[in-house]
Length: 94
Image (cartoon, rainbow, N blue to C red):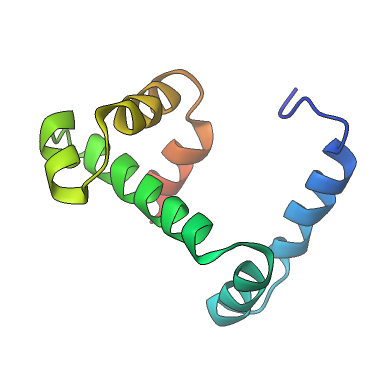
């Protein structure tokens, strides 16, 4: 199962909303309404981490460049290795 929580139906409904959005500007407006600036920055850093890991940049170098802890990078690395189907799709198609 993709997610295990009592709000699964709402979460999947939320994801579906993004499928037919006309452009990234609308996506950005919606994301700003749903998430705090801090949460959006976290998303952006996680994406940077995944891209850098994919380029085989060391965790230490990533930590230094992005100012994040090794635990954060290790989490991204583990996700990429064990359950990273979404990450892998994004990396391949962007």
